[in-house]
Length: 260
Image 1 (cartoon, helix red, strand yellow):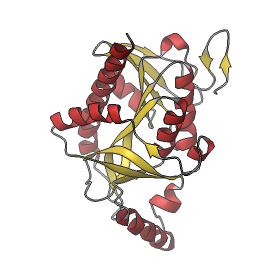
Image 2 (cartoon, one colour; image 1 turned 90 degrees about the vertical axis):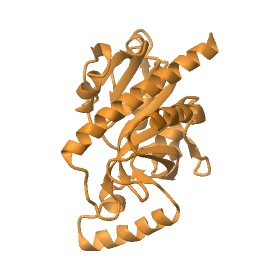
Image 3 (spheres, helix red, strand yellow; image 1 turned 120 degrees about the vertical axis):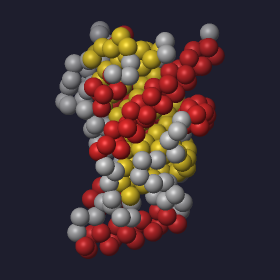
Image 4 (tube, helix red, strand yellow; image 1 turned 180 degrees about the vertical axis):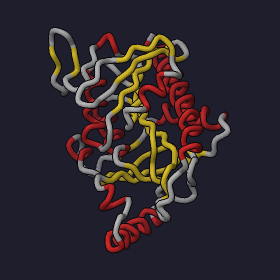
């Protein structure tokens, strides 16, 4: 378990105390998203920043929700999840960006039903044969919200990798040719998107006893490496915040009703 100060119940890295976190958590990569998603909540409390990790807790639909930014990559994403779990959070949703694989197109939402474990962090939680699966009930809530939205969306299996410039996005001709071969395998397996965190978060959550899923905006075409433009991204991000916050709040409400 994450090291805790037994007197203050304060998480080691994110610096949050038990009474500063909500009933559910949203994990984002970019620390700048903390300010933007906070605008979609009320009664907002910004927690002190530590090691570049930013966290905010606010209210959405009657539920206290914590949003924490981890930066990039599975190792730090699971640290943030693990610390929030140690503080009592049991529901997690990662939101952000993913590389799109057809039929997903730029600007579409991509929901993870599960993920291919091609990163190293999840192996510290469970052996490779252990599946990376999203929580069924949380995804049922997300599907209802997505079906009611105007945004096109897809659900399926992510591929999660550690090496962005060695496995996902080629800078040079030789390296790009190697990555193109990998992408052909990705398409053959029917993956719908790739990122650097999902499989580790899904495995860690299930082993810890928490519920987790991932919902991302497709922002880079896996084959052409074309990126979404800033204006389209801004609109999609605002929609993503609303779907994510409403979903995690609804899920938390349902879990509370079951335990009462």
